[in-house]
Structures are given as structure tokens and as C-alpha cells.
Image (tube, rainbow, N blue to C red; front, side, top):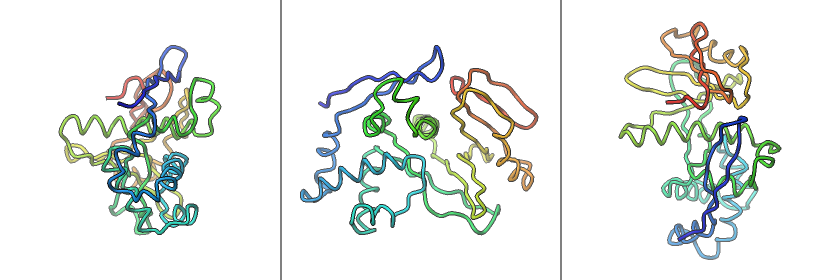
Length: 234
């Protein structure tokens, strides 16, 4: 049994996110049969590097160069972590929005406690002072939607979008043959500019559903956009 430490990260004055930070040695036991014993120390560095890339594109070559391991090893280790339900690789959404789209997945941690541990997020102060605060909030929303769909026995059908011109949507969700564009913003104050990227795609296809999930308290409807507080997500 691994040792678990409860950490409470306050993201509003009264509300909190509750996560568990686990002793990372349990990962070594779980993946030992797939990892060469001589590579365990490098594998530990690999997991920590993954944590520092949370919410970012998975660039296999960069991981390979940083750790002096092959690209195939990077892909294999990511697969092991994903099969162990430690990480999740969010795939890119392919459609007719544009031909020059990014092909790499984005990296998130299903094990949010481990993520906090690896980023040395131990209390409220370390959360708010972390340069990864926004990425942690985005990770929470992506993984929450993934877990809800899995619990309901549904296919994930979660994606993101990014093209060569820098147009990016945090989450694209397919449900009942409908497509929703979701922007995730950790700030407590909603800003109209949060919707700018979504409207560029909405102008190409007005059947798209537009949503913003943010770190504030109030949920409301604004024109075509459903604005949802993180406390009200369903």
C-alpha cells in the first residue's frame, strides 16, 4: 500500500480542489515488469519531465534529446504510463477546419496527486505561486471530463485543436453527434476575449456548441456561449 497525503489546494475563497499525492515508488512497482531495471533512474526523470510538460504538446524528439533516450523508448514509456492510468494523451481533432494541423497529442495526468507531488505543489501558497497553476487547472478539467465519460461507459471522444497559425481550442468534445468547443481558463474573472478563438471556428460551422469553463464562481449564458464555473461542471 502506498502512503497517501491529502493536499487541499484552494482555488477560490471558499471552495477547494482535493487531491491525493502518492509516494511515487508505487509507480516503480507497477511498471517494473515493463522497464529495464537499469533504466529506472532515467524513467524517474522521464516522469518528472512529463509533469513539467503537463498541458503541452508531446514532442517525442524533445523528450529523447533531454534524456538521451530513443524516440521509440519515449513512445513506449508514454504508452506504459497511459496503460497504467497515470497519464492521458489528448488526441488532436481532425476535420475540415484546416489542413495544416498539429498532429502531436497533449499530455495530462490522470493521477493528479502524483502530478502535484512531482511539481512540488504541497499547499495553497505553492499552488498560487506556481508557474504551472494554469496548466494544473486545465489538467483538472480535462481529466474530470475523461473520468465522467468513462464512468458512464462512454467513449472518450475528447480532443483538442491547433493549427499552424496558432489557432487553438483546449477541448473539443463529441457527444450525441454534437460537437462542443471548450475553452478552459483558470482565472476567477470571465473576460470576453476567452471566446475569440472559438468564434473563428464557429464562423466556419455555426452548429458548434461554444463553452467556457473558468475559475470563477458564476455560471451564465452569453450570446452563443455557455459560461460555466468550475464548481458547476457536469
